[in-house]
Length: 172
Ligand code: GNR
Ligand code: NI
Image (tube, rainbow, N blue to C red):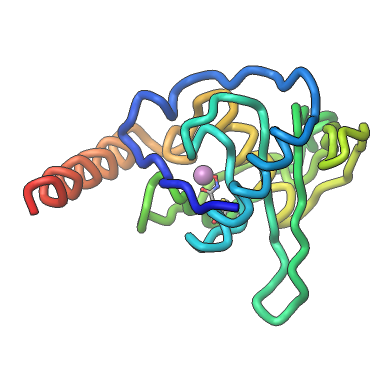
């Protein structure tokens, strides 16, 4: 297992539309293991493969609380079904948009169809933090970041600050 560097905005690679996975094999499981280790190290509660530069439709998540047992979840080729009409506001952050947190409105619940770690087809009912997080991650597969759900003014401000920080970091 290995911790891989996480790509941060603004980086064009995060804007790619990720490709479906053809088969869940040992190579893919090794990538999912690396993604989980990278996510725990960050730390974060979700990670899409594109965030470590792999443009394929794979997500790992663990939304268990600090006091709970780890509960890793793996989603290959996930699809959202039946998003609720009811919307929910939830504060979001992103490992690819470090240190910015903003409220985002999304469907309060949905179903998710996907392949699991063993390549078995599954569907899951998601609400609360799980629904927020899986929708945030599936956005990554389409090249969408949570800041795209904010006003243009807020998004531009965040991107400008991120660019400035990267300039300063590069000059060190
Ligand atoms: O760690 C993360 N926390 C989080 C909080 C609220 C809504 C979504 C997330 S996902 C984020 C990790 C990440 O960037 N995943 O793509
Ligand atoms: Ni993210």
